[in-house]
Each structure stands twice: as C-alpha cells, then as structure tokens.
Image 1: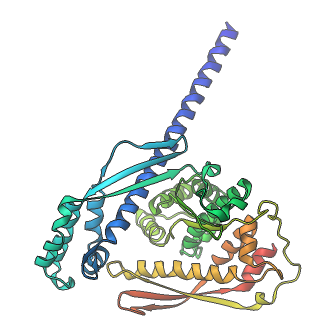
Image 2: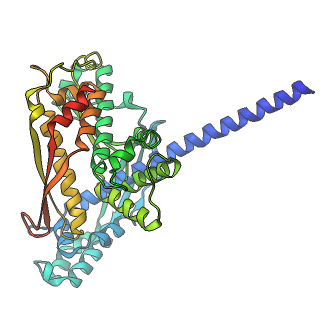
Length: 407
C-alpha cells in the first residue's frame, strides 16, 4: 500500500511538472506572438508615416503639425490580422497586419479640418490627393525569434563578407548585440532619481532586482536583426517600456534593500520616468575572427592618460506634441549614447580601443555601462536649436570609467 501511495505521489508530481512545462511553453509562444504583432504595428507605422500626401507634406509632417499621433495610432491599432500566426519553425513566428487606406485618409482629413492653420494645403486639395487611398491597403509583416535560438539567425547567402565568419563567432556577435541592447535600456534609466538620495542605478544594483530585470531582458524575443557587410550585427529586442516598468515594480515589491515608493502617486511618478526615459532596445556588435577566444582582455596595470580627463557629450530631441520633460529625457538618452561612443573610442592598449575590448569581453562592457550611470546633466537648453526642441549636455569623469575597469 505504501509503495502504491508513493507511486501515486510521484505520478502526481510528474503531471504537475508536465503541466507547468506546458504552461511555460505556452507563455513563451504567446510572448513571441505579441512581439511579432508589435513589430508588425511598428512596420505599419513607419510605412504610413513615410507616405507623401501633397508636395513635400508627408503623413509624418502632417501628424507632427497637428499633434495627431494618438489619432493615427488608434487607426493603426485597428488593423486587421491577415490569416493566422505563421510559425516558420518552433522558434520563429510571423504576423501580417493590414490597415485600410480609407481609414488612414479619414483620420488625416479630420486632423486637417481641426487644425487648418497647421496644414500648408487646403482641405479640398488634401481630400483630392487622398481619394486614391480609398482603394488601397497598407500591409506589414512582423516577426519574432526566441532569444535562445541565435544559432538559427544567419545572414543571407549572398553576403560574401560573412562567409569567413564561423558559426561560433556569428553567435557570439549576436549575443554581444543582445547584451548591448539590454545595457542600452538599463543605461537610459540608471540616472533616474529614486528616493533618499538614491538613483535607479542603486536599485538595479540590488541582487533581486538585477536578477529579475536581467532574466527579463535576456528572455526577450528578437524582432529584427540585420547582418551588415562590415560584419556588424544590429538587432532589436521585444522590450516595451511598460513591460520594463512592470518587471522593475515587481522586483521592488519583493525586496527590502532599497525603500520602495510609499504611495500610488509615487509609484505612478516613477513609472512615468521609466517609460519616458527608456531607450529603444537596439543593440550592435561586430563579428571578428576568433571572437570567442579573444574574450580574455588584459587590463593594463597602470591607468591610461585619459583617466584624468572629463568627457562630455550633447544630445538633442524634438517632439512638438510631447511634454518638454519627456523631450528632455529623450535628449539625455541621445547624449548618453554619444558619451558611450566617446568612451568606446578611448585606447585601452596600443592596439585595442575600449569599445573593441567591450565587444569581446562582457565584463568590460558591464564596467563601461556602470560608469555611464555616473554621468551628470550639466546643461539644458529648451527650444534649442529650434522651437519645441531640447538640447542637453552630459558630463562624465573618466576616472570613474577606469575605476570600474580596474576593479
């Protein structure tokens, strides 16, 4: 009887584990479909915004002049999915969307009618130019590949330059680009002021939150990848600002190392900062021969001459229909990206720049990212260089970069 009971318990555990595994696979596939759908919406948005309307007037310029992006987004999100989700294999899916040209034209005409002074052509002319859109549709196909399937991502056979790159080095470059995308996201939110004099960098440094955010970013599907002829890999992860915030909040609520916001209003304020400041999850890396074997990069014993210098970089952003604070945050993200470029160009050895070393060694890449979290905003100019634009200047003590590298 005892043996039968034991077998029954073991069988029940096996069923529970199988069900949990099935649910995990179902959640992963659902996440991939959502990523492919979001990628299709983004492709649809790019195509429609680039469409000419009248003369030099495009859909994008009309929307910017009238502040009509929300109205256009509402139309795009009413797009129909054509057919079911297409699975190219067990790791890659595609979703095809179509939006009716008549729906887009109707939204543009309504915007022009509400803001006649903002549009350089008359409503009658615009209506005539958009008449042909009644008989057309705008299609877009989005795709998503599971993050663990990097070995399946390959350049086109016609790309001669990539024939000299082995599978190991290609996968290493893809993984480095994934890490670069993740670090770019984290770099963009690290400067956010948190509580008690702390910053988001301190929050991300706590083990529980670092682990939660790291796992989330590491599991994001890849929605696009480009293998360039100069052996650079560029990819985009399916990581939305609201999803990053959900992951951060869940991690904050589960830990006690840093004080969490005390009220829902404080939570909401923090959410807005994270969603406004998060950089696009785009990463880059260069495939080089022997990349995997070159991962051990020796750090010089003596600090380089640049360790006593200060680096600065400017960034600007324009968004006429967005709050100035959000535009300023976008400008800061651009400045941080430029600052990273300056750091990457610094010589680490006689033959190796810091950027080259970071691409070969994840530890060096992480050290550079940590040092960027110490960059400070030194100047903000609103309505510069044009009305509605914001220009900022970020400054970083390069001694902080060296200290992170030498640790």
